[in-house]
Length: 227
Image 1 (cartoon, helix red, strand yellow):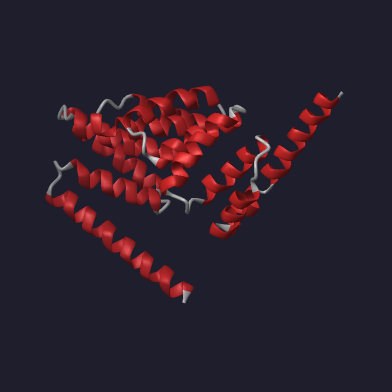
Image 2 (cartoon, one colour; image 1 turned 30 degrees about the vertical axis):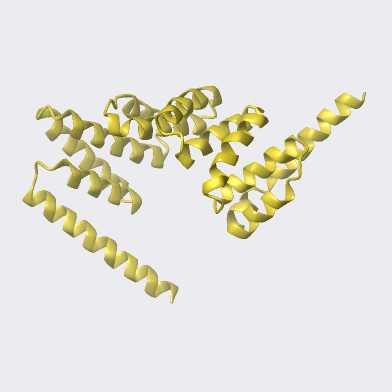
């Protein structure tokens, strides 16, 4: 059954690739088709072809002086580099984007890029800029919560996680990290961890070490304060 589903998804993806290739052949001046195909190839882990396509398309639209197309293609290529771990190259591309419709997304990706580099103060700076543009975006709130958690700003992290959980209670990562924050603040936390476990057991098991890390950190603090 699982194999049949995978085969169906593979066929669907191949058909979509063919349709987008045909669309590019028919309308080579429409940048959306290049962006969609490059993004699809990235999702399919075909990174070499995706990079070649984005680079080729950037050459075409930069030469035409089409700034909007260039912005979208830079964003797509930045996402590819982010996916494969070329974080510094992704950051350079995200920093070039000045399209109003893409700004919040670009700042979010800059925040997530600095999160990967464990440079949490830069994460907060870009996250807050993204938040000013799109305060309801759960991904923006998540990266802000995660960076505040990493910096030990637990009350602030709590605010961002709670904002997400009001509308998106089905996020295992938010529930889990909200539980860590509650532990750190000496508040009831088991309900959050239990929710995370039910929502995504794999994620919970991979992240379980963070629970003992917080417990050890709190023990150390308690030992210091009791001396």
